[in-house]
Image (tube, rainbow, N blue to C red):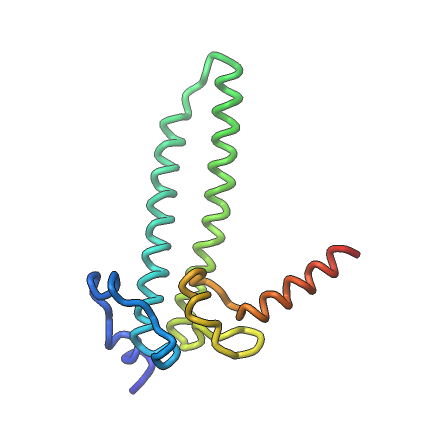
Length: 149
C-alpha cells in the first residue's frame, strides 16, 4: 500500500478524533496516528489563523486617534504587543506546515538528528517537535556552552 493511501485510509472523524489517543502499544506512526497528528496540526493552524483574523479586525477598529496622550501610548503598546504575538504565530504556522509535510512524506515523528522515534507524549504535547527529548537536551546544552563564551 502506498504512503498516501495509508495516511488517508483510517481518516478519523471528529468523534473518533476526540476519543482517540495514540498509544505506545501501537505500531509507531501507523496510519491512525498519522491521521491523528495531521488533524491536530490542522486544528492548531486553523485556530491560529482565526485568532490572527480577529486581531487584524480589532486592530483596524482600534485605528482611531486617541486625544489623550496616555491613551494613545497605551494603545500603541497594546498594538505592538499584538503585532509581535502575530509574528511569532506566523513563524509557528510555518513550523506547522513543515510538520504537515513530514506527515505526508513519512518522516513525521522521527528525530531529525538520530532518526529514532521522538515519542508520542512529546509529539502530543508539541506536535511540531523535530528532535527527540535527548537530542533536544543535547542541542540546548551545546547552545548554552556557546552562549556562555
